[in-house]
Image (cartoon, rainbow, N blue to C red; front, side):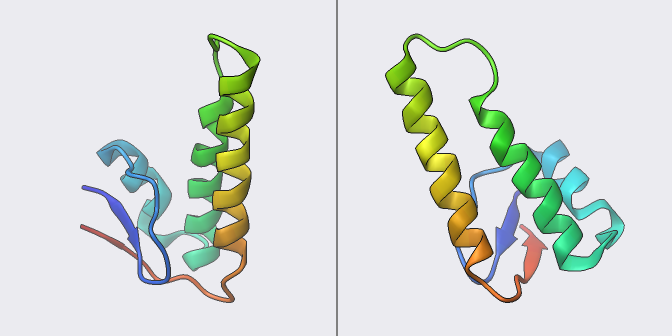
Length: 79
């Protein structure tokens, strides 16, 4: 099961992350966005081969979150 958004493509989420993000719709779409954003930001954690790879991931995270924040409302679903 993956988290989907009508307004934009999301990163593929493991089933348990999808369920965590939806969390009985706790907080509505803003709550889902918050939990999803926290998961996206976690992608820079851990050990990296080199600083360039880490910086590339950080740029990708920043751009993805910027795109999320550019929408006034997001419609999430599970597929």
